[in-house]
Length: 96
Image (cartoon, rainbow, N blue to C red):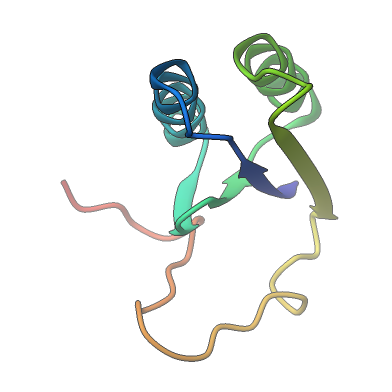
């Protein structure tokens, strides 16, 4: 299923800057950054649970926020890209 993850981390302190880096690094392990604080993740329900646990342990819920949008398996007709930064196909080939 496609899951869109967005986050807002308070970076007014060094600890907040550390949390921001850790949230981004964790999301990179599961998906593709499509905007500054937005990731598209093509994952199954178990991976989503793992990711949610890791992210919830990382943030400060008094200062930061996470949002998880479950777009589902039929996501291709629901995602449209316009503008800079060419879109990508998470089911396509990955060149390293």
